[in-house]
Amino acid sequence: MLLQLALVLVGFAGSAIAAPTGSVEVRFIEPDKYVDANNRFSSGLKPEATLAELRRVIEQAASSFLAPGERLVVEILDVDLAGFPNPGANFPYGLRVVTDATPPSFRLRYALTDRRGRRKASNEERVSDINFLLGARAAQSGGFPYERELLREWARRRFANRP
Image 1 (cartoon, rainbow, N blue to C red):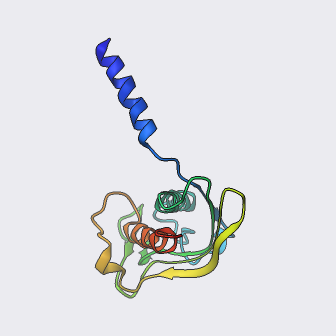
Image 2 (tube, rainbow, N blue to C red; image 1 turned 30 degrees about the horizontal axis):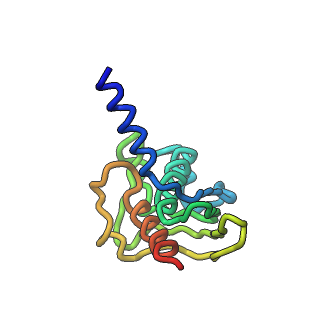
């Protein structure tokens, strides 16, 4: 009984400590026209799984930089994952060959609004880093380590330390 009470109190304290953040919405605009992530060779992850993981990465990367009540809408206009597919290797999952000449790249549009719906920031841009192999670690757990690092850095540059 004492242990249960302690767990409840710890859970309550943990939820009270966690600061509320803003919300992030990710939209994929015409994903069937993306350079990548559409599984052209029927190897690797299904496009839905790739886009779901990219949504999760963007939501996690950006939400920590938003103030309570802020809303960020990110529209993904194009996706080009790091590397290129080698469909014959590692059947049935395929293999992506990553070199410094094949960086991840995203074309996106975003709008950040405050709690009253007033626009605080917006832009359309291409997000890429030719030096992606210097910063990202392929040994990170989970998929898309290069894309994850690129999108985290993009979110930090755009939304951290704002007035």
